[in-house]
Image (cartoon, rainbow, N blue to C red):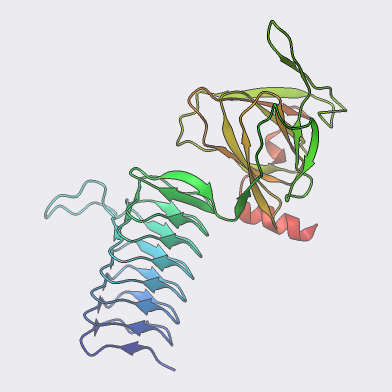
Length: 308
């Protein structure tokens, strides 16, 4: 089975996969490589040094310039714009073009703009009209100009209730081993007091703490797992969101009260984002800092989870 092209399409490349359909007025230059079962829309342009994976959808009006790499199962909406030169000048080509990589399963919304040298990781969702100016981590949903992370795909929000009205104690979550705990509060005319004890509310011996603060709202912290480290997180001022992921299920938790804590066991991928300007995150850990305990690549994390 060969590929199909509309009579008005100009396809100069011989490296087009079986089952691919190239629609009217598309132009594919000789050096381009397009995989199997792709859909290439009307009025698209694909330059020489472009690689398109299998089962990719490129909607109408998209131009893929030299250096663009599209992995399998990517969706690119109509009129999305890609760049490969940060400082373009007429008749002054750069010494080298910056590669732009769209990884497996990502979706790019209509009229989005992707700047040169950007990597959009797996399963990312880029909103319509977004201007992406920096790398986007796996599963993130971004929108706006400049694009900011607004949520994570597949991370179901935890049910929320005012901390003061909820009973104290642990709450099970969808993520294996992760526990949301409302800590006890002692009311007082001079101001309330919240407390917890190692081995009880905090289910491990505390060996270290650290504070995260002055994080601008578009920044993301965490994005790693630990092999053996236990953590207990409290946003002691302001608020932030934490996404916990056990490799099978992900859930988002809003920490917005000093008596609300989240226990993160070992081998749990965790991300902190949506910090308020006054947000201060306090983290207790079960061991001193050890860089060898970190897993910073999500694919490695999933492989280790599969190994048990």
